[in-house]
Image (cartoon, rainbow, N blue to C red):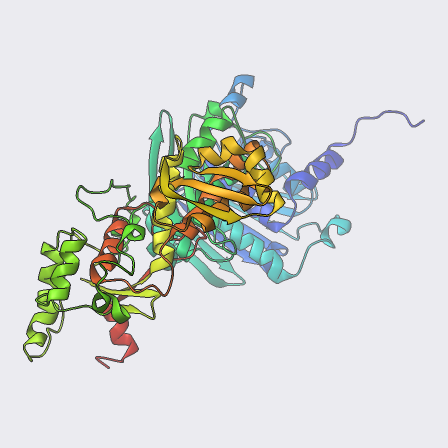
Length: 616
């Protein structure tokens, strides 16, 4: 058996390098963090050949004293912590004191630094762990560190590096993360003598736009929540604009992290509004007392551990969920600056029209001319007035709008060029129904297109969720509806009767193949009882029992809402269409249906002008 020996310092440093220095991007990250910990306000980065040939970082920080340069490259030497208790409240980005030593063991390193007020700078060079003596050098206040020929003395490690383009991509991403985390610091990045980024110090919004793009900011909602000593600020892209590979940036006390607790909280925040083939996009900054988070759990410091992970999860989930729950009134065609405001849910205003599903159906009391082809009648016509009265709609503002739109035209004159509806209704007023599927509305910005089924589905879904927080009320049917059922549906009613009742249904078994629906959820009193009953029984059977059903409650309510929403190809009257627009303005998350697809789209007058080449 071989004798136990102490490893030489060089080998120890190379082993540590295997954890810290995975690739050039890891070297760049460590050097940038050192610059920020030194208080730099300007950092310049120059990279050659993806970082394999050279990485140079120059900062204007506090610098390193002449006699401390050898210590800066020694193992476990640092100015950032001194006592064991310091590990419980780490406020700096770096603190292990091994990064420079590990890098110097597998590369050629030149370190030049000058403390403000000293006569000159000092230089020290290291090649494969062997350091030269400190010598005078020329440099303004700050530090310049150059790392060349990474892994030159460990060819086994070097052969695992990827192509120059791949390594450069990782370096660029590492730079972006740190530049995003610290917008108050100016950054410059060059690759192969070409300037890639020139980022002046400024506000967080400008930095996000420079890194993630203007479209990211334009389609984002702002997040700004404080709970005790914890705060979350930043931007979350609206679900309708989320891409299949959106940018995802989360920073904890200025440090980019990949944390399972935070990732799960953000997935939950988007779960109810994001289409299944899209990924959420966000840039969020979480700040909290350093004693409440442990960053010393991974050599690369990209993972953290929260002292109270449940509270942090709830804070992040609720903050982003509320920001994404902005009503349609808060989402419609506003300036980029306004789009960053966090929308708040508004209650249904007093006197709001009834649900679309409860509007007059075809048959007794229905005016066929009102709905034929979804056409709008002139405000002075009998059918228009009768429809308004029948649905008990306060038509003061809509009638004024339609008078401006159709009044002159009805007398044979040309219609007005632009009608400007009141800002109190940001989704405007209905103009027409297209193929029984879409509502065309006019607002002050231009044309609004609404998918009426998707929009109403979200409205019904949100009402069901609000009612289900206690128990969905049951609306008894005057005449029970019987339906032929298969043995599984009958067994589901018998085995999960309490669950069926909790969801607002009264269903009883009349025979081996017969069920009677005696009540349905009150918000869906006018929906088809048989269709609703079959849908809910299918989902209960699919999710398998009360406990599993609780975990999938929202999916089940979404199914019920889908069957309870107004169907496509149903002709709506003008009051019905306007009722839907008003409900959208007052409903949270109304910009997306239950499956994450958009429910409406704004075409501004400028968009229409571009389509028709006006002004060119």
